[in-house]
Image (cartoon, rainbow, N blue to C red; front, top):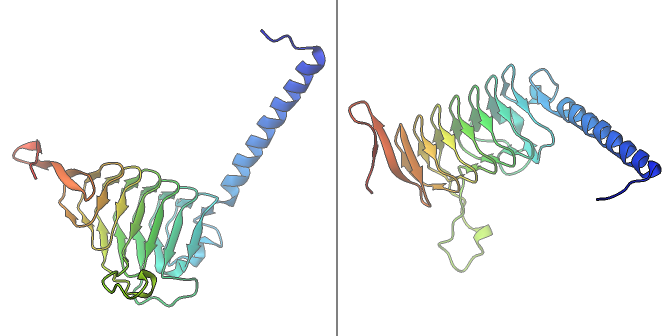
Length: 219
């Protein structure tokens, strides 16, 4: 048991009170610094629906005019959200990134679009999810990978789907409606509606049909 003097007790109380005050100030300031639908920063986006919020702090956001965000969507802190390779780039498609209504993007995630990333309504993700529609060529062994082609292929994530913590969605992926993707999975191809998929690459392990309900699926 530690015996505190009156002076030690007063210092501890002061420290705790100061800590509470600073924490409350940080939470209020953090909310004020977030990007809300009525802010000047939201108007830079191609679309930023009512009730949506990008929490502060962000990691990277650029070329917002090619990014459309629906209503009542929340994007967590430390998220990277971009269209194209660099700020000011003129993109070939518009929107490049579309995020629907009532979505929740977990903190630390990255959505990096170059051609087309289409995320439906009511899509939720865990933390640290990465979604991209561009890859890197590696066929020519005489060149560094950084100097080779960067092929692009559209990505689609259907309404009502859930991506677990650490999921990676790669170019050309097409995730259906009401799909649950397990943590740390890598989606490279097509996942049908109403299924559960896990692994790298992700494979369907359960699927729902009106006739049979939820049933295991053998690969």
